[in-house]
Length: 350
Image (cartoon, rainbow, N blue to C red; front, side, top):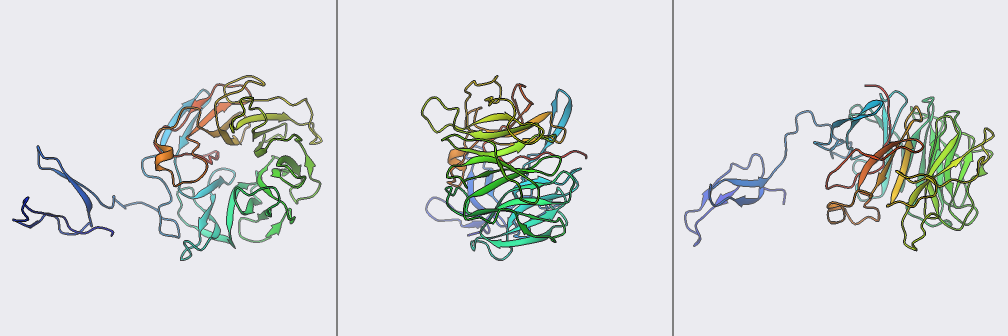
């Protein structure tokens, strides 16, 4: 039940009395015996709140904060929209959302809005999941993964792109294997993860899906890549650096030649450490700042608070959002709360 009015009575059921009017609807009351004060669940203030088309809130109340970094101040806010990606300049945002009226059906939509969730426009709808979204640096394209999440190499997941106005829909990979996690370089090339060769590795291709090049090659899993705006480095999540035999996931970096081929020899990089030093994790979902000087990622390196108990049963209680200067800065924690925080993206501007 959604709640209603509160009532009280004596221990034998006598003196029944209504304590609230029912507006707003309240539930689960608790009484402080010393003072007689009552606390109960009820709707919070809705003034100024912007909802998603599904009717659920867009921004997480109480998460907005400003944090000073050595060379900038970042404004951090939690969103309920899935896989947010900013347009260049930060004036628009695209998210994956449940289709209104289709909750539980599995239908998802790409929705472009202002950063606060206002003025939403649905530009694409599909049966199944839309995840790992990115907006090209020139503002002309939005790319994403469409298919089954957490699927093995042989399950079909495709990379798509579309114009921000909903035109130009195009399948970039159109293959029977698992292609996911696209990220744009400054020149429009796309780095992504693919299982096309039987193992999840990192690839680089042109913005139209042509000329794919394999960047990593080893028995472990490489995934969730991000590419520096100038195309010089790729950072990605991997389990190949784990020497303990556990399922830990860390971040690694790979330097690229101007041609896009792997340039310098592979160098491992974990947040807060030098090359080839194992760190706590998982450290996942990296993303470069627009100027390439910082990287943001989700990590459990600070230890979990209440995330496993409060999370909805999914497989990734990563913990909190961290940043550090690239390539060898010290980690700086941006969020510290009892919820799982992940999938951060950068924007410049107000």
